[in-house]
Length: 322
Image 1 (tube, one colour):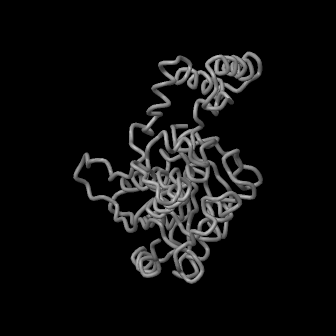
Image 2 (cartoon, one colour; image 1 turned 120 degrees about the horizontal axis):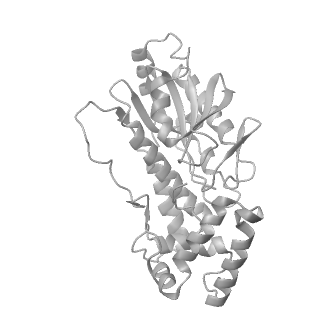
Image 3 (cartoon, one colour; image 1 turned 135 degrees about the vertical axis):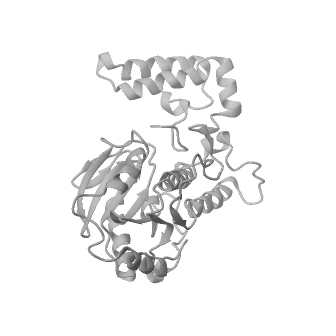
């Protein structure tokens, strides 16, 4: 998986504190090498993480550089919000409404200020060294924002036949989701905030989409997602289905498919069927494949005979953005 705000620091990978001595660091590295080496039955991916961690902090010079600046970019892009990449062609683009990732960005900044302390000036809220020290729940808010923004950039290439609505509220009464409990242990899991990250309408039907980054790969068990990055009791597919159903009833439309989008490498396969949820086909999809899926669709599934213009009008009239 690519780096994200939830990626473990090299100290966490080696299992030592950031204040550990060089001898402690070296002993931890050797211990982790033995534990994760494939020849000893260890995990190949974790073995590579251990080697990468040592490259970053294994010498005094490298450690000083890492402690000073950390790794301030993800996939070559800053953590700070940015616009879409420059257009490479002149073809008409997808119609888009709403502000992807905006709500989670607001929550991240608010929670970060609360964690740092009121009245304390934060020179750069996206500084890598600062974020490394932040609680996991604060990092997850930023990771969720970036996941939505990355998916939105991909969806923008669908073409003129598609319309996308981002960050659509599905809370009771159509109001915005509450911030209470978000980003705190025992609070609302990120994937269960009362909104649909993206609604996509095109020739292949109406799709409800959740964009997520749990920092670790996920698997499917009994029709739901599981993984070390999910909070206890978190059921993202069930939550997505409930929110899609609420919106569908309000707009008098029917979703053709429900999709959970995760970063490349974070799922067992490019596209993983999850069965039927609230009358819609559900799938787990790695981000690079989502456009192909939405363009080709699922055989025999569309808008249920309802005219695309009519569905678009109903969605547009119902959508309230957070």
